[in-house]
Image (cartoon, rainbow, N blue to C red; front, side, top):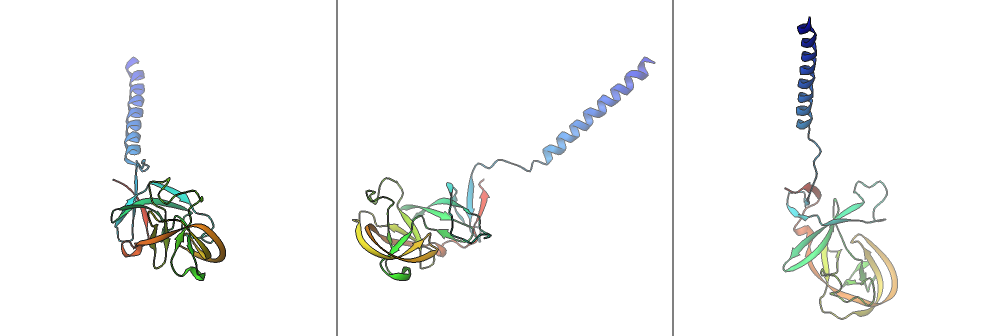
Length: 196
């Protein structure tokens, strides 16, 4: 009688252990969620733009319901010997600052406007002041060592997207130089990938 009583308990215990072990193996095989330490951005042809440094939210630049995410990501690119920050969305590059023009409809030579009048061209950031504008998605950079200029702006290109005709006096405009049309190097759409 004693043997018969312990045998069912032993069989049930053994069965429970087998089931828990198999469930553990099943859950281990379904390890679908993994931490991501680093991300890279790739273009439509699989070319890597760079590692993601961070993100920024750009408000009011696209209509509600757009298929693009509101969050944009930052990467650093090296153009010749210059390190430049670039904001990347799903289908385009975005300017870090608005470009100012002395003519209407964002035509002519673009200028940059630092956030504060006392900001120098090279300070306080280690990275240059940049923006995106036409033709294509050209990356413009403040000309290093150039004196600030007073201009009468007649239009502003916001985020490399929207041209607004507006007139105003700017006492601290910075001349720019085009570095490269980024569309000659990279092809949208862009996507995030986990870095190896």
